Image 1 (cartoon, rainbow, N blue to C red):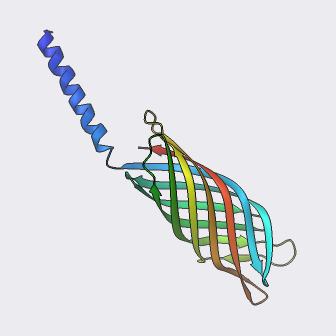
Image 2 (tube, rainbow, N blue to C red; image 1 turned 90 degrees about the vertical axis):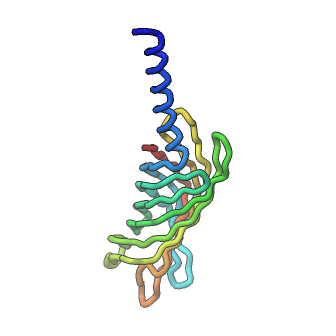
Image 3 (spheres, helix red, strand yellow; image 1 turned 60 degrees about the horizontal axis):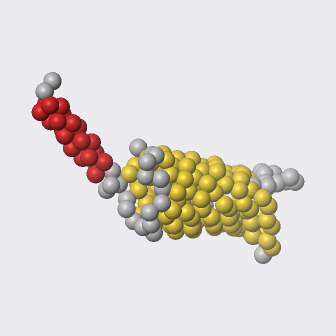
Length: 183
């Protein structure tokens, strides 16, 4: 092969690879997993009951330069309550190089969740409206297609279930780590 042919093939390969890299600057599609630990508080008869809880989840979203939107599944496992939640979250990202602070909010609902006290019958809870607020920090290394998030969040579920003719609200707060893979 002549030198002109090698130069032409090299230039073509560089131009084609830059084209796909520039397309990824507009938006990134991602999927990921979360895990957290914190506490769930129940408001029963104007009384406050708090217990340790764990949370696990999966996310699928779209990351654009200043904003991020995602669909999220959460499983919360507390003292006597398990909750399955479907959420839609929106985030605002502060444009900094490697460590990117962000804050966000989410709206969703519960499904197939249970309240199982140590004494008394269990109660299945469905379709309670939930809200959440998040604040966190993303480690964004430009070389790898994985992003690491560390965040704190507060989730509020309104009128989740009823005990003795009184509706129960749940507030869950935790610290989470999130691992997102960029496609």
